[in-house]
Amino acid sequence: MATDIILFVILAAIAIVSAIAMIFTRNAIHSALFLVMVMVVLAIFFLGLGGPFIAMVQITVYAGAIMVLFLFVVMLLGAERVGARSGLRWQIPAALALGVILLVVAGLLLFGTQTPAAAVEPQTAASFDTIVPDACAEDVAMVQASGVVQGTPCLIGDSLFTTYLFPFEVVSILLLAAMVGAVVLTRRPREQAA
Amino acid sequence: MSSQSFALLYPYLLGLSAVLFTLGVIGVLARRNALIIFMSVELMLNAANLAFVTFARQLNHLDGQVFVFFVIVVAAAEVAVGLALIVTIFRTKKSTNVDDISAMRG
Image 1: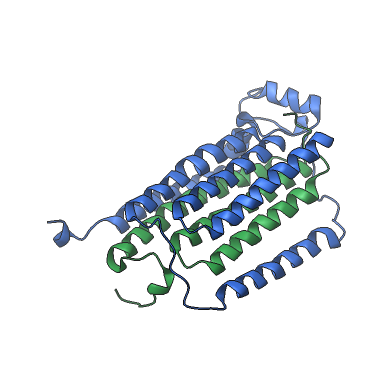
Image 2: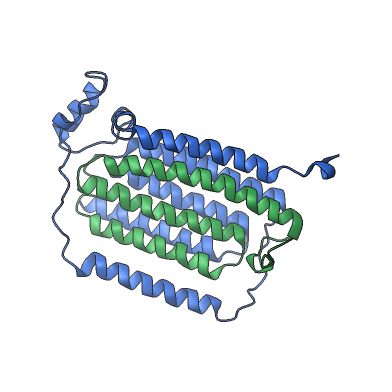
């Protein structure tokens, strides 16, 4: 138990310091690398909270694909130095004040109110009836043994292809639209290309 | 790492999520570089993901983790289109400062 708390404090401190550094550093590449640090720390939290699949997706998609895209664009544009001051002098104090207000409200909601009892029926081993019978037998047995639901690839995939099949298909169309949109937006006009 | 890690730390994990979300909001409000603003939005999405996974663990239900999967997919689509927009704007305006992008026509 004590190791949990020590681990949490260290990881949370790394995440918060990295996030602050991301916002206030003057170099866009440093910002992107600090954001990668935050994402890796969150992946470790996901691992500890019983989500190995989500943790790996976080590393590969977020820290891998998305942040590489960010770094690629920053270097492509040559926009590393972002020293230009804002035209509005009161902007940063106002942002900080609004942020503090948001944090106070969130803290009041978190620690000031009584948490309502869980309205969701906890999943048990019996609630996993997979498409293919006994497809995730090992994972279900592990859930049964520990009493803790683990987001293994098999169980997440089963949920995606049964309960969430329609959102899953919608999201695939969204990805296709985003891909086409990105290509169309960055295409140079015909007369310039010639 | 055992599956029992971080048990009973749920309020503090949600607090960390709130702090990271607030830092993302401050980043959007305080910075004028479109790329940094974009990264701050990603930070907010990540904070929400942490809350999702924490609730999934607290309620012992997988649906929260499935939602995180969808959030990550939508974030990937958003980044692809958003960065394409930034590249296009940079071509005409030679700047990533959002204060320079105030005219309706280029």
